[in-house]
Figure 1 (cartoon, rainbow, N blue to C red):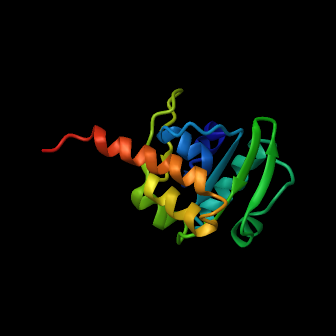
Figure 2: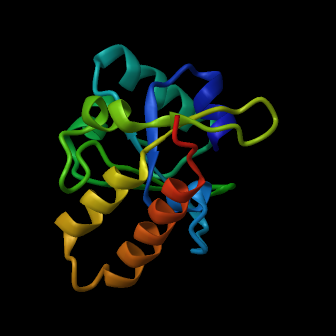
Length: 150
């Protein structure tokens, strides 16, 4: 899925469970959640990527921008487009704390930072997301422990 999105030069940030996994969370997931830039030219590129992915149902750029969550099925798995994740102001907000992470096969997508992932889960419902929040807080603690004081 990421290769098709990258091929179409879509501006996006990976969020959700897969972002946590990339950062080191021990969660498992079978889907991909992304927050795209809502610029019209970017949404046009995203709809082209969705066509490449044979995503169903078929969707337009306007529908992507207007829906709080667009869930699509592809032969590669479930893809969710979330323009405005809970607790954030969308793509421009998330990309500030995002990092480019090497995933192999030449892919280096932007991945939401752990603090932003935690912020979003807390805005959803801290009680129901408690376990996921704790996992991500542990990832953040471990990451801080690995930094070198200069």
